[in-house]
Image (cartoon, rainbow, N blue to C red):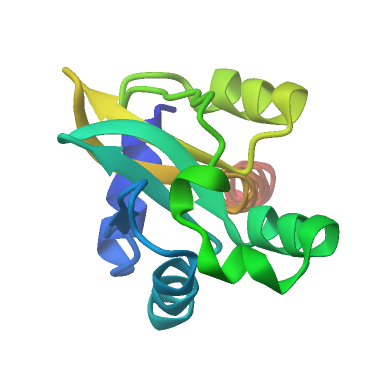
Length: 145
């Protein structure tokens, strides 16, 4: 099973769109976009390339540390700039391991340097649960049939 399987599933459920923002955008635009798209993170792009990931968690932590003045800053001040990416050909198991070990919740998917999707830890868990249910059904059919 590869990341491409998750991306296909997301496409079939209309949840495959990748929402982006630039480092120069204000934090208020970030918050509006998170709410508008009902997502927990945005991919930060500059000049067409991925330069970071910014999440609602980043905003909350920064507000807790610095107060409401964070709302006057830009995304560049909040984003995680150490970005771990994967490709659609990577195995789901290896990405699950990486996400767990490095405590990554959102991973951009890039093929040939082009952003083609984003995978969340929730997507990985959901895919694994569906696969387990499928395997269970096949085992039940094999045993009873």
